[in-house]
Length: 198
Length: 149
Image (cartoon, rainbow over all chains, first blue to last red; front, side):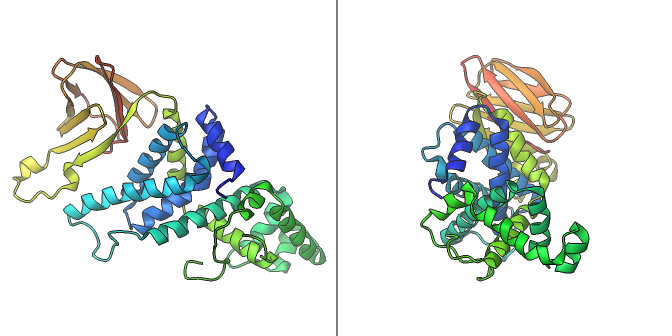
């Protein structure tokens, strides 16, 4: 993932004057910025304040990032710093909840970075799939998932075809460049479904 | 890292990824997208370094505390703002003449002069959120974050 070509390419295009590339970067990493803000238990007003500053700082830094592939790390660090600024200010006002954390551990931030990289790559790969795959997988990964009977009725697919189509769609997902790039990363991450954050 | 994941794990991971995005309000994402309007604008970003509304008002008389004061600081200059009834008064530090642009989220832009001692007045108070861009005769070009009053 450190060499994720899609992130590097998006940063390069956004450093030019490609609004579409910028939008994709924001779509991909807004959940990371958002999640870190919620770890600090900021109010929605403060989250907006932090978000605004983070994206503006990134706009300023676009052409200067030494390692564009490390963008998630840069975003996480910058968001964390901006959150701390807000936390420090609100502590002076004593408006913070007693149990709100003063400091979010680097380990937690690192986990969020890995998770954002994984989630972002999965969403990007999903976006490249065909409409039938979108519809089918969306019904399958919904929480709770739809039954084959419901899927068959909604999408007009024969019950017997759902399994094979599901396998084909997931295979296409696996083969997308974005996920292949993710697979070359050397970091460890918990498989989904396990662990307290899942 | 996806090596060894079966279809079930991949599907679960995909669902979690989609829900992580859905948890983020669209307005938050849109705000991020609109930040790109500042790309290639040669302005320096000024950070909010003081906000009286975030400070405890202990020991201040209520009429004093009701005046909102904000300070934005960049490497080259600071903007000190004071919100009074009906207007926004400010000073550029160090004092210097220039022009102040007021930009609203709706996209409207107005401007007002900054006098030799760095003072300016914005009337009426712009609709929130808005931001200020200050260009001085000495060549400084500074942009504040969004301000909500």
